[in-house]
Amino acid sequence: MKVPFLSWSARLKEEKPLLLQAFERTLDSGLFVLGPEVEKFENAFAKEHAIDPALVVSCNSGTDALILGLKALGVSLGDEVIVPSHTAVPTISAIEAVGAIPRFADIDDETWVISLPSVKKLLTKKTKCIIAVHLYGNMVDIPALLQLGVPVIEDVAQAQGSRWKGHWAGTLGAVGAFSFYPTKNLGALGDGGLFLSREKFLAEQARMLRFYGQKTRYQAELPQGINSRLDELQAAVLSLRLTRLAEDHKKKKNLVQSYRSGLEGLPVVFQRIPAECDPHWHLFVVATESHERREGLKKFLEESGIGSLIHYQTPNHLQPAFSRYRRENLPVTEDLSKRILSLPLYADLSPDSLDYVVTKVKEFFSIR
Ligand SMILES: Cc1ncc(COP(=O)(O)O)c(C=O)c1O
Image (cartoon, rainbow, N blue to C red; front, side, top):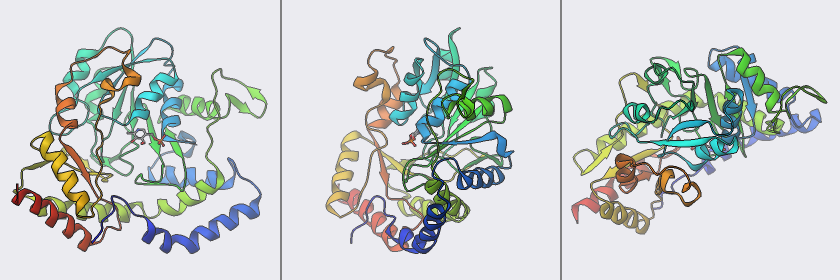
């Protein structure tokens, strides 16, 4: 049996007639960027998140959504932005893109998201913003972070559809930055992203910034504008897929439950999900007892036809590209990155495939 880390062939087959209809509609409209499909998607997204459509600004990627957030908040050259080191590289690239300085925080050893005590240690007069990354589907306690009095950008790339006490991820901080990269909970057939802010002023800034700083065509109001627009085809795909988000959430919740009960008793630990959080799982990650065990398990799964990945092997504060920033001592991040392994998880993962993965993980531990 083979279980790829991710497969969307079943989903694409099912969606194909609807996708073709959406493509045809877009072709016939003759409009390809920021047209009626984008407006329709922004309205549907806003409705789903119980927020005014004027507060939702689609753009070209999750990285751009973070950049728009930082720019709208006025973060610029020399400002400090506190961010977990344990995140995807683009969270840091966005900070660099506005000339700000990333200050790397550690993560909590149970929830694996940014640690509040670590953030507190990094606060200085230059701190302009905190980027909280909702990792693998789990959420950061945003209300607790907001107590520090610094604007918080939520990086929702990995937690679209998660909720904290009923509030959608991305609606609690000053800005929510979403990614529609194909692998995400809500994925396009290419790049896409979205900025959301409950503050009208910030959303207005982001709307101009994504369009070269223009309020209306050929009328530049804001400096430092960029070109970051969602195209009509991707918007049509996203509108279609938005309607399935809740169903996927349920499916993945059941799959994670099966993984957790199937792997119970083995020497692996799972991410702790706070009682306030209802995660829409993006990744299912286990941590082994040691680095050697992780490497052995990965190899054994590969030999058994099972795909796995590591999110992330090299913490950002140790990446060569970021070596010029202050080297923090981040023991939890450094230890966890050596022991984690992401197992296959997607809404259409069959129960047989999941059982096969569980059987093979058990087999690995029984013979070692
Ligand atoms: C946590 C996190 N932030 C930001 C991004 C960037 O999103 P995009 O690839 O859409 O630019 C990603 C995507 O990999 C991510 O996982």
